[in-house]
Length: 257
Image: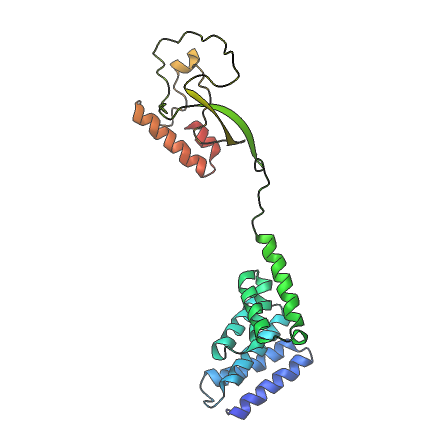
């Protein structure tokens, strides 16, 4: 190819002819040759429009070859040289759609529709925008219907007032006398009834009823490989370690701690 502006034009025309015949790989080679002449400064008087068209047309060849990343990159370079290259904007929207970059594709196609207000000249862009909108709708979070979310159950519990301590009751204190059966169905004085949503699988620090340890449990310390200080701070440390493991999804280890 002649190292001149006319040589760059010749490379572009040769590439376009090959593209029309379906010789996509050869077309890419000729577009690349023209771009090399411009970007290596071998040809210094090539207009920016011609530089941008070479990138945009090579991007179209990449789209036909389903090389979406290369097409997006070429379109971005074409727009870097000439931001008003509408074909490059539309082709980048096509590439981004195929790459799953739907927000970027939406911005590009909306810019194309602004540049081409005539519906007869923007039919393909309108159709692409509708396809992008459907994909974005699929990604949008679904609204939760009234009631509990999937995987959760709704239940009522009786909860102590705010001044109740979150520590376990003193096991050494004498057991309280059994209270007579409540006459009313509401909670006992000093308590309130409330509704909460509780995870069905496991929940941090759930207010489960504490069972009395069996005689065997008193004699043998469970999980001797877990070293914990025999103190209140040791209990807190075990709880914190279990919570951390639970958050990471290590459920069996969380149960051990």
